[in-house]
Image 1 (cartoon, rainbow, N blue to C red):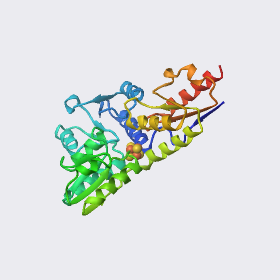
Image 2 (cartoon, helix red, strand yellow):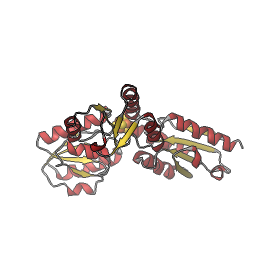
Image 3 (cartoon, rainbow, N blue to C red):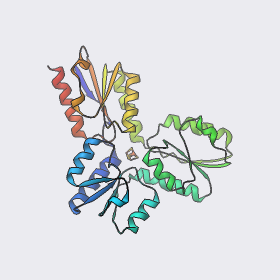
Image 4 (cartoon, rainbow, N blue to C red):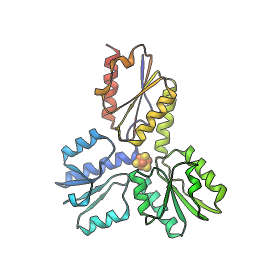
Length: 277
Ligand code: SF4
């Protein structure tokens, strides 16, 4: 019986950095407010609530420094925080900031800005703000057909798939005369997905750890399901079931970008205890 953890499983650079920024701020301030959950992981959010980081959905709920999570926020949120005389603690991932800068640059240069990503994702909602809410959001080669302008500038949600992005750009290139593209995909996601795929191919079962509300974890789960005999998406070791491991030889584990290493460790140990009886 072999239990293997995929390379690049768990926290990415941007999430780790946001957690470190929150840790430092919690030492400095009595009350700290996170504009939306700091990461898409309920266990970590709960742990930080106990430490004094309160999740808010509107600025009316804040009366102390406001932490901006790694996904970033539109420019108006910074303005509103400052208008209220509150301090901004900015944990936006530098790679997300770069995409925001490109979105603004394209807008200022007069391009019709197109964001390749998921309409509902907070990172995309923030990018939209840097184009004064004029950008269009597309997420597939098919949806590229809806873009009619002659000068188009494209940026991408950092966690999108390179393959799908390439196909979509190909579609745009067929019809658009002037096309300027910033590939703002972050390779942390791609590396994690590739490693999970490789491990899934040689595993009988894949355990994918991460928040049920985490888009990148759900994507990892899909990849694992396609490439292994069986896959399960769990948040913590409590959800593991003994019968999943009956007659199994090779067990693979991976985890989304918002999963801390201590949760991965706990799942690993719980699986080891189950298989060792
Ligand atoms: S996935 Fe990449 S861009 Fe997104 S937070 Fe992590 S390091 Fe930053």
